[in-house]
Figure 1 (tube, rainbow, N blue to C red):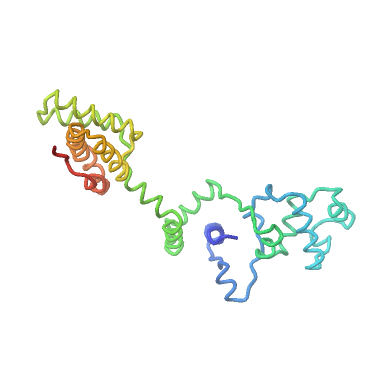
Figure 2: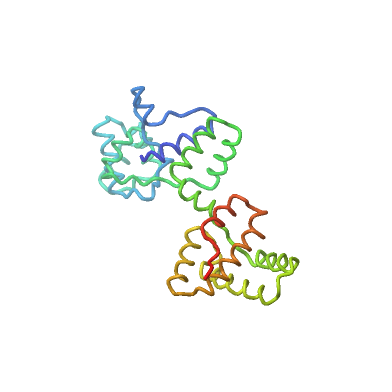
Amino acid sequence: MSALVTSWRWLLVRTNSGFACPTSASSSRRGLISMVDCNLLDLEQINEEQRRAIIEFVRERKGVKPRDLGVTDAYLRMVRSGKARAGDGLLCQALKYVTEDELRLLLKGIVPEAKASLNDAVKVIATARTDPEFREFLLGLIKEYLGDYITTLQQTWHVTERDIEDFIKAKRLKGVTEKTLRDYVHYLREMLAELDWTLTPDGIREYLSELAEEGEEHVLHHLTTALKSLLKTVLKPKDPALFRALYDVFTVYRP
């Protein structure tokens, strides 16, 4: 299993039971062997040939009897010969005798890991709110595996028509002329349409750089002036941190 799945197991067990579950690393230090939990596998991805190989392995290498698997001798012979299908119940019983490393070898390194459900995610968040140790562990995982994604989200403004309307109203109250306001909105809408109404530091830089390469000095001046004003008027009161992240990536262009 991957380190992420091992960590997810710890989270789910802690969520459901309230007790810590040792990770693979801690299990190794204690001399324990981590057996496979079929609840963490996408069983549909394990084909019939692989299922028979797993059953054969526990029969021959682990000395597991049919009664240990909850089936009769006759039925197990049919499964091993391919005359009967090895269902999920039988497979899960067999996996109780297989270590994670053994399963990886049996499946040639490709272990189909099950995805967590939305209900699992909700329970994890609910537990994190009340359990400090659990919360610290969860936040560590999020930082390690989703840190870049979260950073991007924190620097993204999804502009709406309402934002543009608020900008227009605020500028009118300050006495900006209708001609200037029309120019501002025109260039802002052109930029927003090109960027799918999503402003990020990289998106702003790239768009302004393209205008500079095309020699659009007049457009650059009006757009950078309008964009500074939009950010300060609409975004700053709502999200000062995001405002600063976007506002500081460019300056007003002066021909």
